[in-house]
Length: 251
Image 1 (cartoon, rainbow, N blue to C red):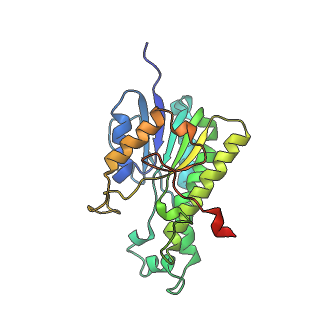
Image 2 (cartoon, one colour):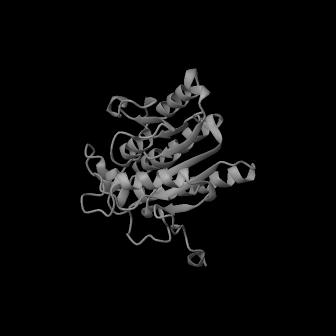
Image 3 (cartoon, one colour):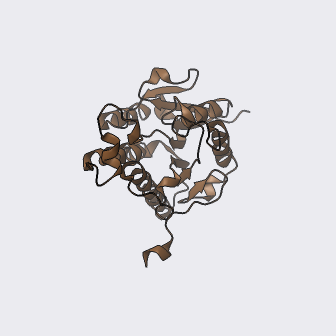
């Protein structure tokens, strides 16, 4: 008798690592894949669900949570959420000086523009998680695709407040959520993952690893139980732990 497929929700599933994750999980009958993008028609076809999500808009977060917690989809618990969708301020080419306003305190620093990165890369994903709490399986994994740039202890580049600050905030959110799960005696786990320097639009062709290989590693870490042993950790895809903040730096 075949087992019931598990369900994964992947945000930003139309390109780069997100698409590689969709393709990887959808390649096996063991998984139902739900994926999001700002334009849901840009997502791969043939998966269990394609949804619109624009993390810059609060109403989009609310709408997605309502879609997933009502109707037929409400009958399916989510076993794995992968918060992959994100925003790099350097990609905003429409507003002159936007990236600089998030990068340097001496070049028109804009708290509003930095806060936009925080909302898209950390706070709205956290709100989505909270709104889907009742939809999570009892042993669900909440996985945030972070970055080595979110490590305070490893920071060597001046400035860069928008992107790196948002990743540091997401790391803190995952740590906090992991402690919530543990305090409540739940089997659920929350993890931040540094995918490494990938061959994507952001990383370029000279990067170290392909998004397809990263996706395979993430799939393996879930299926062999490694994630369930790693609550509250900041991991690399080779399963080593990444530096958060050396306590010796604080004293």
